[in-house]
Length: 171
Length: 145
Image (cartoon, each protein chain N blue to C red):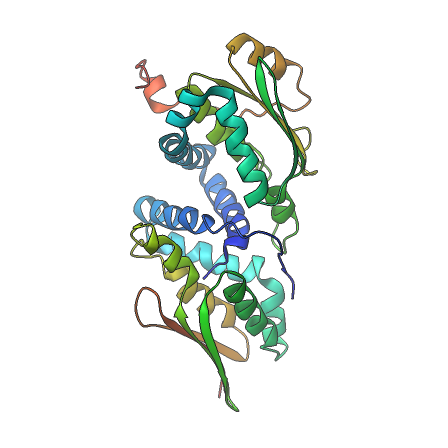
């Protein structure tokens, strides 16, 4: 059994292996995770809005031993990660960390937010220090404005989702 | 011990593990999955392998017992001159999934069988796994003859 505490280190190996096959392989895997998380969370976030986001991430702080500040405003929910347990483990590791490890987070948050009628923006801040800022906005333009001033905005997807590429609408 | 996590345990990562195993098996095949598990044994658990290489199986035993205990697993340890046997009567990973009616992927147990085999490769020890059923298995560290 790979302990639940060590899943992150296995995940890191998966990212590296898929990225070696090609960026599209890594992005396809992230999309799969995004789809699964959307099934789990989109209805909840759509119904409860930013407060539901705050409640979900408050639980994650506890369960995943994060050090983080959470803020809820009229416009956005902010998750300010002060000590990310995931990147910390990927780095406290006899194996090397995936260069794009941090992007996996936005890779699932973005589709969940979109499916919920919300808009995510991420400032990774650093790829080697375990802190970042995620904001989820009601308004797309405000999310875009936040992303535009980010030090290191997360852009996990270099290609549109297959359904977007064909010009279709997401259901 | 190289990795020694404390604090809350997020057992739902076993669901992520099961899903990732399924994803890799379905899209890339068993050989790719196994190679990733072997790489995890060689690289993530390098310090455990280094100790096995040096003739010391205690790091691996401590790793097993620490995390089985931390996750609420049921197991016993038996030692003899030549081997250390850990009999797992309730695997916490499988137990977590089955209690939530999440089917185990057909390759779910390879995270144990393939990883253990790879930990022992090239060392004075053979590390084997005998799977009894979804919840039970026996892990053995045996000094090679």
